Structures are given as C-alpha cells and as structure tokens.
Length: 260
Ligand SMILES: Nc1ncnc2c1ncn2[C@@H]1O[C@H](COP(=O)(O)OP(=O)(O)O)[C@@H](O)[C@H]1O
Ligand SMILES: [Mg+2]
Image (cartoon, rainbow, N blue to C red; front, side, top):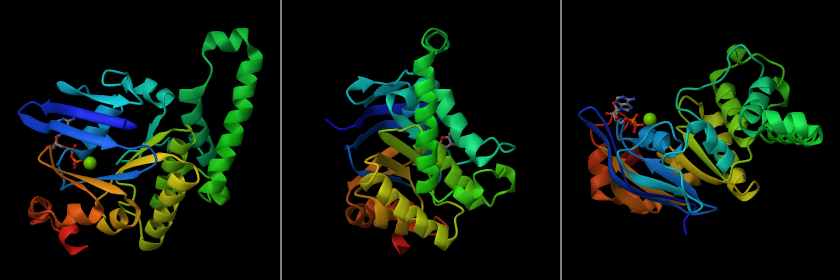
C-alpha cells in the first residue's frame, strides 16, 4: 500500500478544471517530485491533500485512511506537514518562535488534558523543545535563532519554513517549490537536506519543483501534470524524455524540462 494514494481527484474553480481525475501514488521512503508548467495544478493538488481545498470528486488516502475531507488543522496531527509556495511565516517573530509556534499549534495537548494531566503537557513541552533544537541544528539555523524573520534573507526564511514543517515530526512532508528564489549555493544545500530528510530522518518527501536539476538530483520518481491532468510518471529520466512532457514545457520561458 502506498503511503499516500490520490485517486481520480478532480477540482474546479468556476470554469477552470484545475485538476481532472488525477492519480498519484507516493511510496514510503521515496522523494517524489511533481512537475508541470505554471498553472498545471500542482499547488491545487497540495491544497487538496492538505485539506485546504475540497475536491469535487476522488480521494486522498494516507496510511490507509481517507483524508479527503479532513480539516487542514488536523492534517499535521496525522503525520503530514507542508511548506507554502509563498512563505507563511510570522514576519515579526523570531526564527525560534516561528518554529515553536508551528509545533504548538498542531501538537500540543488539548486544553482539558493540559488542565487534568499537567505532567503530560510538561512532557510535551520538553519533547517539543528538544525536537525544535534538533531541527535548528539540522538546518544550520543556530546563528539566526533569535533573529526576526522580516530581517532575514529570503533563502533563510525558506529554510525556517522547512524547519517549522520538520519540527512537526511528519511522516510525509509536502514542499511547494522549495528551490524557487534560492541562489545556487542555497539550492545545493537544499538538495543535501532533502537527501538527509529522506535518509536520516526517514521522512517521505513529495515536492513541487520547477528546477529540473533539483528534480534530477533528489527525486526517485516523478509525476508530471499539465492542464490539471497527469501526463507522465516514472523515473526523472523517463518523465523528462516523455514527448507529452517535452511538449508541455515548450513555450515555458525557461524551457525547464527540455534544457535540463
Ligand atoms: N483559489 C483559486 N481560485 C481560482 N482559481 C484557482 C485557485 N487556485 C488555483 N486556481 C487556478 O487553477 C489552476 C492551477 O493553479 P495552481 O494549482 O496554482 O498551478 P501550479 O501550482 O501548477 O502553478 C490555474 O489555472 C489557477 O489559476
Ligand atoms: Mg504552484
């Protein structure tokens, strides 16, 4: 059974068919890349998986459980964390607070269990702090931990978003264009981190990525979308050589798939 299985998922916005009968299987332990030109439906698919959008038909099943109609705030508790294409951080809070807040909002004991079983809440607090410190070390964020987000370079802000998602201890992490806007050094670091997230943290990764060098370097398997439909899936090489994929990318300004 795949860790995540999307079956015949369709989502419309007015007359726009953002997703049409999309099938996607993400196996435990893999890095799976979702590619496709702008407007192909990649972010919409992430939003359907993470509960932000309700598809008109089809399902998303995570670890055998149908999550299609699960509210977005409950998704992290089931083991799925995500980052956003446009950063969603508290800009006037510190790096540490942003990472801690992510963890608190989703993992804290409920009000009643906190009131009734203080020791449980205390343990959670200790565990949360330990986990957050680990993630800060893992992503080399130590020098920035007390800095305010708004004052940090974009690449570091993206790194904080990744940290916030990792601090949730997910089994599956969804990354929406993690390399967009990064310089070449930051992109190289990102590739190493994605490898480590898979190998050392044993977290399965589903990423939307435009940069084909990143896809080639980190992805085990690739699914390509165009106009809301799956046009190819397979290894990075197979997918990039697929005629429909080459066709889809013609006319894209960076010719991403063809030139990689
Ligand atoms: N909230 C929304 N309201 C209306 N249309 C949307 C919304 N989100 C996405 N779309 C449309 O759905 C299509 C797919 O968009 P999106 O999933 O953002 O593509 P991608 O992430 O692959 O660039 C586009 O035509 C986009 O304009
Ligand atoms: Mg997008």
